[in-house]
Image (cartoon, rainbow, N blue to C red; front, side, top):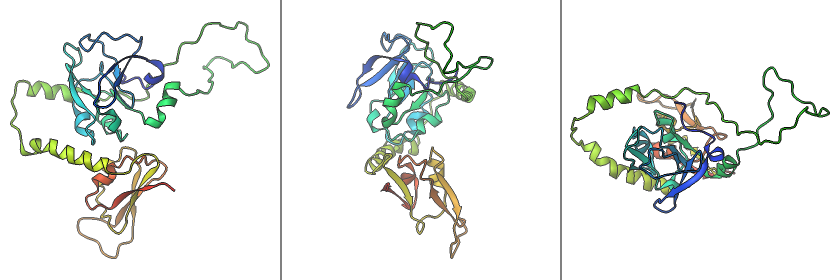
Length: 280
């Protein structure tokens, strides 16, 4: 298992759509055919939020990780990998934080920023490469035979290993048939997610904005570093007149080149030391 095809937007074909809350969700398959949700072959659902339903094992980590409640379960009866999938009816709400992509144990999720969709569908322009053992044709040379057939689209080989899911299978086996009581935290989760979504929706976000740390408020707790999925926050030494027992004299610093403006660090900060500002 190698995970979702990261070139699916340019290589796969639009096969069908499924109703979302405000916009239809695109379904992609390799040959353009789709025989329904109970057919056993589902393809990749979504464009900005792409999930390979044929790989998905219904771990649920993506649903828990999403800060703006993009996902909900949809039944896929009889599917060999799992009989429910994380459907994205609120795909337009995605803030491109990549949290769901990071936590998927089988690499079935791929997030593509809306501004990058057109380029991804076009496939980009690859630089010509020479296969080892072959000699590149020079500009003044004419190939012996010119092929009239269109070359097959190249499929990239992932440079990563799939995430192990042995732990997940063992957990499911151990809990099979066991009824676990609802805890106070479990009951509070829906309310918390709604508050979190309302908070994030109220913030300015996107590539034209950048997070800004107010040094006089920052307590060096590193929560923003933990939440950032782009390694866009460093902790740097900072001369403080006083120190506390809890925190060292370090402050968060936003790496301007890699900040995507997703706003997760703003939400994560416990002392409201981060705000979103328009890029100059």
